[in-house]
Amino acid sequence: MAESAWYDKFAPLYDVGTAGDFFYRKPREVAIDQLDLGVGCQVADVFCGTGVDLPTLIQKVGTKGAVLAVDGSHEMLEQARSRAGKLHIDSNVEFLEADFSRSTGIGVVEAAITEKQPKHVFFSLGLTCLENWREFCSRIFDAAPSGTRFAIMDVYSNRLTLGARFINWIGAADCCRNVWKILEERCESFAWQEFRPFKILGVSVIVASGTKP
Image 1: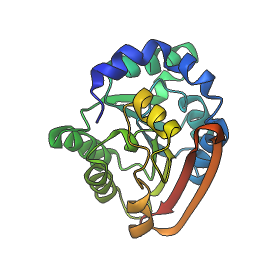
Image 2: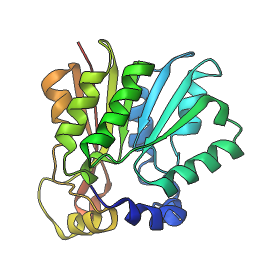
Image 3: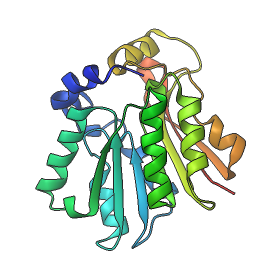
């Protein structure tokens, strides 16, 4: 995984650097819709970053629902906390910091999933940044209860173009990883969609979803 220090430094400029989430807006909406959220649901927002998903997630789960916002960067979580506080939705959000690149950090997230049993899990723009993404995704999948709805939104390129190299550099990622494979292999009702907001770079944004049997 990218060192958390990379994202700690980048955190205050992240929303500006992503043009206010302009390029990810449509696939993000589709991915959240794929979670099939309703009032009172509990959802884990893994790789929550600066909390860009929190307003939409809280709107869908309502005041009786809850969001577990998880990230590996302290400063990104601080940005998310600030966003939630300003929008007065922080009472419905629990923040969790964990080092996903280490087995002990994955264990922290596993324990939270096991304890809270959210039936909806969203991986947002993070698995491509995680070298041990398959272990991480598998362990979270195993910790979730049967019937959990999963969705992934992440970048993808089937070849290492110059644009892919740029995305990899700016996000400390590897966008050639097929990070949806765990869902494809283990989920029911698997679905996969591709968006092309970065056409000029030759990089796609994928949305994958499925339900744990």
